[in-house]
Length: 251
Image (cartoon, rainbow, N blue to C red; front, side, top):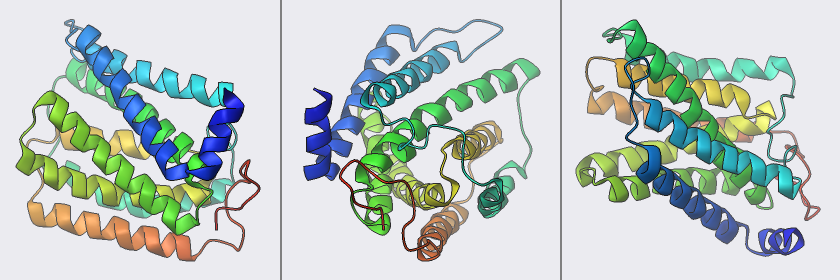
């Protein structure tokens, strides 16, 4: 079975990445129906944390079974100096916290833990396994597809949970840009774990700020991620990233 999946990934990486994204969401929705509503006084977001921990575990088990752990950047490696590339993303995250952070210590702790599980779940899939599969393409094309699948995944979630489509459209556009930017950064980092922290922090400050950021600021941030991602990919060495099983390099 593993050999067959490798063959499919080599021949049709976009289709395989799309299939993995769909399967991930099927697991997410199933877990949401089972335990998504759980809440206790000391951990109001218990259900959401369990749902995302479950999907994260599924991705990590799959990567280990397929032998993709290193290629999917799930190990803690890469030069520490490359983490400086994260600072511009921190700079665009901080303004979301400018109005302040609301909630009791219990609520803030619950949100922080839950957003960490979200970061692990989404980064292990998108910038981890999916980006490894898509690395058979060029670095630019792989990053674009990572962003597109990441954004369309949020559309699936909106459809399942019945969220307003006007808000969803804006979210899909912003998450495509966000996913592209993080995918470009992932080529330089060689590991997803700084991205997990960035992702969790961004979600946390947006959820616990007293109001949504202005639409114009969200548009500026989306443009930033596209431009920054493009710039990062342009700065890649001739043979960036990890070798993939097909024998090609993610140029």
